[in-house]
Image (cartoon, rainbow, N blue to C red; front, side):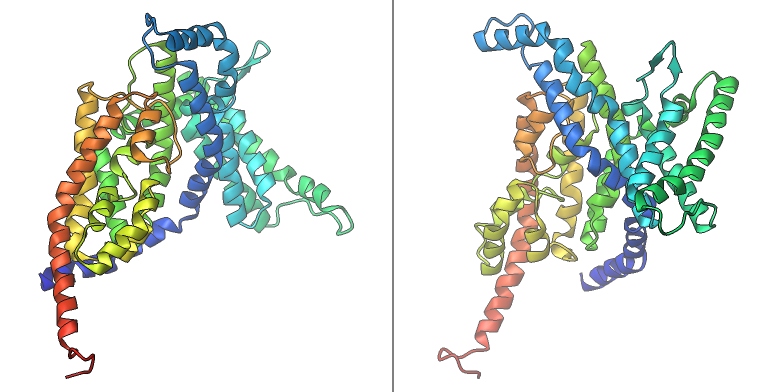
Length: 439
C-alpha cells in the first residue's frame, strides 16, 4: 500500500500538478472562464424567465392554479419572452465583452476598451445586416465559439499593436478618456480590415458566414461533448486535479462552458418549439448530479462523518455539512482530508463517475427530465436539479439515488480510514500514564 501510494504521489507531483498548474494559469483559459462568469447573472435570470413562460403542467390540465398560469403565459408570451431574448438570446454579447475585458486586463490594456473592441469584432462577423434588419441567429448559443475566437483575436491584436508602439499617442495634457479613444483607433481599423474581408471571403467560397462555418467545423466536437465518454473524461480530470490540490472545477468548466452554453441554447429553442430536447450534458447535469455537495459528491460523506467514532472526523462533519448543502466542501476536502489521502482516493474519483453513468443512462432512457435552465451552482442539489429541468420531479428522485449510491461507496473506505485514525489515537493515548505523565 505504501509503495502504491508513493508511486501515485510521484505521478501526481511530476506530471499532473505541473500540467494542471499551467492550464489554470493560462491567460486564455482564465479569460474564457471570466467571460462566462461575467455573463452568468444575465443568463440565470433569462433561464428563469423561460421556465416561467413554459410552466411544468400539461396543456389540458384542469387544476385552477396550473390552468391560470398556462393561460397567462400563452396570452402574454411575446411580452414575457423579451427578457429572455435580451439575456439568453444575446448571451454572446456579455460573453465577448467579458472575455475581452479579462484578457485585456491581463495584457495591461484598458479593460473597457478591449471589451468593447471584442464586442465589435463579434458583431462584425456574426450579425449580418440586410433589408434594414440585423440577424440574431448567431447571437445566442450558436455564436458562442465565434465570440470566443473574435474576442481573443481582437484583444491579442490590440495588445500586439500597443507592444510594438503602433498606436496614436496624444500629449499628456489631453484627458485620459480622449487619449484612450484615440489609442484604440488603429486596433479598430485593423480588426475591421482583417475580420470583415475574411468573413466576406468565407461567405463567397462556402455560402456560410464565419459563425456558421465555425459551427459546421465544430459540429462533431459539439456532438461528442454530449456523450458519456466526454462526461466521464471531464469528471476524471476534475477529480484528479482536485486530489492533487488544484482547483480542477475551474479548469474543466472553463473548457466545457462553451459546449454547455451551445447545448443549453439548443435545448431552450427545442422547449420553445415544443420539440424533443436534444442534449443531456449541460451545466445543470454537472452541478446537480455529479457535484452533489461539491466536487466528489461529498454531501453524503458529510452526513456519514457526523456519526463517525473518530473525534476528528466527527468535528469535520459538523463544520462541513451545512456548507456542503450549498455545494461548498472545502472544509471536508482539506479537513478530513480527502486531498492527497490514499484511503479516500478511490471513492473520490469513482463516485461522481458512477453517478454520471446512472444519470446519463436514466436520461437517455427518458426517465429523467432534461436541463433547460441555468441555475446558480450553490443551489442545493435536489432543488437545483428540479429547477434546471423546469421543476420536474424526476431529477429530485435521481439526486436521491445518486446520494444513496455515493454514501454506499464512501462508507467502507471511510470506515477503514476511521479505524486507522482510532488506532493512531489509541497509540497516542497509551504513551501517557493515567496521571497524564510520560512513561
